[in-house]
Length: 212
Image (cartoon, rainbow, N blue to C red; front, side, top):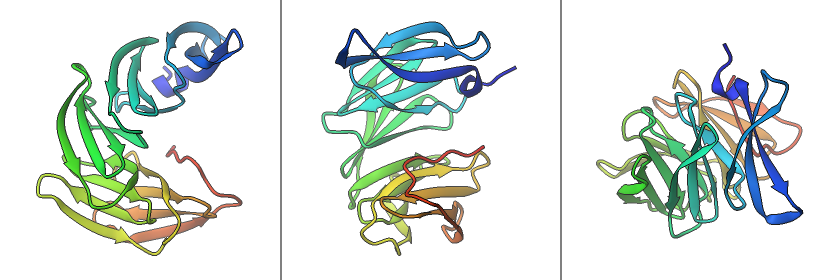
């Protein structure tokens, strides 16, 4: 049996020559890429699967949306441009990063449950265990941050000038992969203590990361 990420291919499909109102299309690989369903979401592109792979969060500008089985189940207005989103481990909450602010949303109600401020401008976010976050900043630093006690620890600081593009935890939660703007490498960190485990060289700057 295929997982959700294997069974379905998400594709940004534009229709009727109108580039301002695309569809997010859901296609089944089992049936030869036949059309499953569409959701009308204006200009959405990036996405993040929920932990159980049943829902997908997508965002553009100040709006974030959650799609399940081809249907829009939640839409959130952060009032500022969203740069990244991340799911809680139980899939009940979604964190959105906007500038120096993190909003935590209840997906079912589309309501903000908490708002947190950080001292750095956030460019990437990943929700680790509990209320612990890995944050990538415009300054090129990786911070481990807990909003409960508002403690932030900069664990990677040698990438000055290269904004963090993406932070992605491994499936077992032991490692964190990070890529940076205009950088020909990917950093792998230990999520426990933040130490640098490995640097992987790449032929060109990376814009996205995923663990297999």
